[in-house]
Image (cartoon, rainbow, N blue to C red; front, side, top):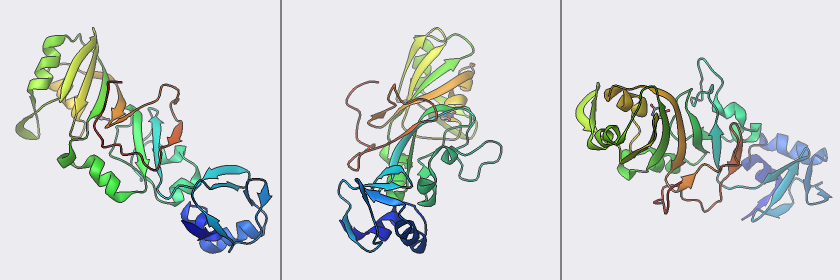
Length: 239
Ligand code: URA
């Protein structure tokens, strides 16, 4: 795709068109080693890496990224008690209107996808698509294979007489479960674990669809995902 430089900057969240023109005219934008002077020069966005005020910024037509959510952050764009996860991202991403894909509780950690692609948010959160999400759960009381089996067979939550089931569940330790859900009800893991007489002490999401949280992505860090990434694709292995 070919765009004028100011339009390319605007699309990436560097501000209003006029502000983007100003960035170029003030010599704040480079491509490679070259300081750009003309806001209306045409650039090829394929593989384009802008450098804006010293910060390298790879062009992404769609913003799609993964964040290792730390505890103490809310997924809401209008947080009430804790900072928003969006405050962990650079300003241009917030300006272009990225949103978390679904919600993790304030005290839940792990893989959170963030995007400005509305249809993708719908596809990943709609119950129709059954995108699996894997949670590592630390429990207050001991767990075993029977507990895991009960969660797979289904438990009744307080807001619906129909049982909800884990798509998969295994005890991974004396106080640890790995639970796969394909729907995303309010506090679902905590309520399911409570329904079997236990309590969640810590909750971490390790995978969504085909994506697994990379081991080297530290809490609070984020990473771009490829333009071709299709997180709803089935998983090909276990994390
Ligand atoms: N289930 C929960 O109870 N909390 C989360 O954050 C995610 C799933």
